[in-house]
Length: 122
Image 1 (cartoon, helix red, strand yellow):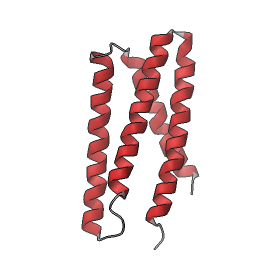
Image 2 (cartoon, helix red, strand yellow):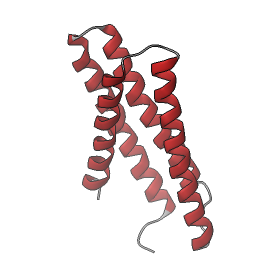
Image 3 (cartoon, one colour):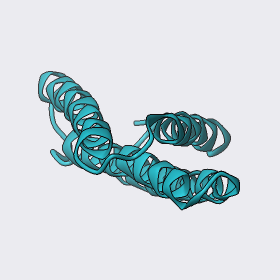
């Protein structure tokens, strides 16, 4: 076996740390505009982090098993991630009145940080 579930969990934790740092950096960068932009960036970035954490819990939560259940958990995690992310971003814009641009910028930055963390963590 090349990759254990424990290694996947460690890699997920490392990626989440990178994502939180990216969300904080974008929120700090948005302070030049005003506090609402910074709050929107933090909300958008942390929504991606929460969605990714939920996805990892679902995908890696079944332990060792067959390929069928593992793929089903992986797909369920991806679907849950994107549903939660879309719902959180819609909630931020519609319910809280946050500006959408910094939320999207932070979401993109956090997803790029995830890719970098996973690529450099090998």
